[in-house]
Amino acid sequence: MNSKASRFLRPEAALVKHPIGVFDSGVGGLSILKALRAELPHENFVYVADSGFAPYGERDEGFVLERSRVITRHLLTQQHLAIKALVIACNTATAAAIHLLRQEHPDLSIIGVEPALKPAIVLSQTRHIGVMATRGTLNSQKFKTLLASLADQAQFICQPCDGLADAIERHDTGKIIGLCGQYTRAMGQFGAMAGDIDTLVLGCTHYPFASTCLQALVGPNVRLVDNGQPVARQTRRMLPSLSSHCAPGQCLLLSTGDPATLHIAARRWLGLEVPVKCLLI
Image (cartoon, rainbow, N blue to C red; front, side, top):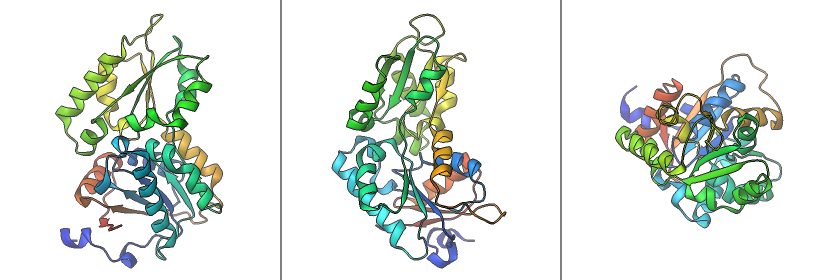
């Protein structure tokens, strides 16, 4: 298929039946999609990368809320999509929009993500836990409430990571290495000794794609925790029905930005060689 055809598919040419919708500000939510496909291999998925309006983590809450509403309406009202569940594969969008989206669409199963603080507590021995996240996530009331509810169980060192999601989005290796080094140094000492940070929460769905770099910086004894598997398991529990066919599920990839960015990321990180359709919303 030539490049022009791969970028501008007719909806019927990329049809997937009864899919689960997944969206993020860009390619970071592919880490959630990867976990979902492993947990639900026979389900169909439609993934929206809102790259034309990224990054969400450095936008104000009202902007993120409106984009979340626009994408949700599109996934629900387009006849060739008609999603049966929605996964908000973005911590910032979950914090800003999930409560309102659930009110507006009470018949739709909506699953959000949040930094994996509770799983980190289970894993930590020193009770010093690092949290890397976007500024939007850390400043949200939803995250502050979660953090306050766990304050007596561990000490959390929260680090806003301006620019990191964008660097991962663009696969800017030099900048990813530089920012990961800057932010881990700012958090303090990592290790297994008393007072050391022994567990690091990756509080943005982009960050698992920098885990190799982060692990090298913090050392092999520090546990990295993301929320892909918990979200996938919760999605399975909340689905109104599971697919009845035994064939592998299909994926439809949509982008409001440069489709090549999503195409390359899906191939690199998920081994998905599927075309990407431009989405003008």
